[in-house]
Length: 631
Image (cartoon, rainbow, N blue to C red; front, side):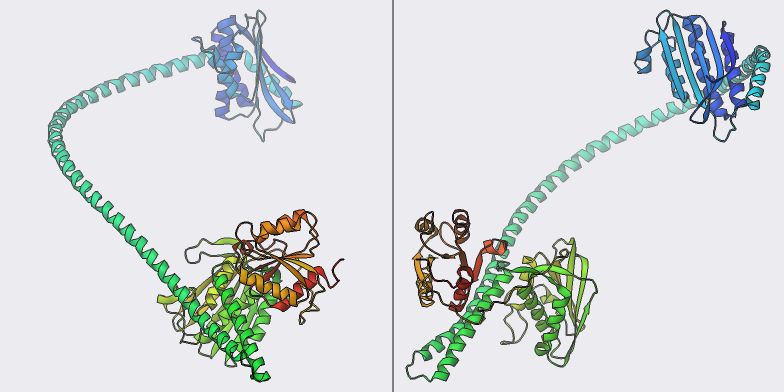
């Protein structure tokens, strides 16, 4: 206590009242609000009452203290009693006493800002607590502190008389309140009597209502029982109808699947029969010994072109099925979009104006560039036909967008790059809008389309991690929007030009291990390798290939393997050889592989079926070089 102001003693029970009045007057003099004055007076009087109760009296010291620039009213109550044995239990809230000892301590502790208590058996107890002076009150130092001490000392001589007068006034107020309560009690008794008479009447009325309720309850129970039986019968009927409806829906779905498969196989058969007709007719003419050289070349070119068209057809089917082997690379969408727009004039014609709107922000995606450009061309061709050769085709690109919900599939926050193609054509009728991505579905005249263009767009978008959306209004045009995942900035890979791209390189007797389970393909590929100048050896499965290569490669300089084979597949074989013979090159060939479609980072050279002898020669030349075989 830095500035003591007053010390007083508790010797009689009346002194407790005096302490309360003194504390209230002091706290008022220090600027505390009425609520805080009451809290301080209550806390001090409770501790003083405890000291008088269990120690027979004590001493109270009043003063001011300072901490961190703030002043506190500090009050210390000490006694010479036996000490408080249950202090820990009191502070933890576990002590229960009929004398109010625990309540006084815990209550005072909550009311004050600072609280400290020390007790020792046989040496009494000291309780110190304080209350921070209100903010905005000028500190009591120097003359103000001296004036405060004089006021407290002067008021001390008048305190007993003031306290006695205050007690008399409180007693008179209590007597007046008691008289008012007695009058209120009489009034309440009268109201209670009247209420009792009303309750008796109400009870009689309730008894009559209860009889009516019991009769209504019996009737209601009979109605509920009857209704429950009706509902059980209806529920059984609904369950039977639900089972029948589910069976019919399953039959309908199966029928729709069969219809889709039939449409797909019919379309494939129709297109391939057309291609095979060209090949068959050309081969028949090529067998003629007297065929002129120019016609022979024309028929051979027709066969080659037809094979390319067949490969493109299977590529579109695989793109729709999301099983095509893609070759993703990182490229800038805006640049590619402008490049495709420049070549569209030859596709759309001079009467269609092509407009390009590309944002200034760079937008990178990782996708198959050829399939991306093919998708744009397919959508542009669809727009051209919808505009009947005249109108405006607007190509837009925006980056950093979220992909919305499309055809019931959940969207994604992205970011995505959105490429849209908007035309001013006739629009797509609502009844066919949901079928435009089906393979071989087309509304065009016979001979004007295969129905695979938009299915390729759909398959490419899905396999690339995006989607394609379409909005159309009859008579106002259609907007196709292709969403592709945007990737962070990184250098795009530009493949180095192949100096032998136009050649069909030959070998020098290098040994090639051919792994092919199909006898016709294996025999034909063996002939290709021999004609190219290599020394092939053919095995029909991967297990036999591993046994033939042994642990040192058996002198082979490359392995040429199919991907899909019974037992161990081509990728498993390649990975086993990478572990056993890491320097031995492996070439994989496939026309369809869901494994390669899911994984583009397998790390092996891949030839797509159908492949040409020139492609085989270029790949072998690149991976094993043009050197002669080791002797």
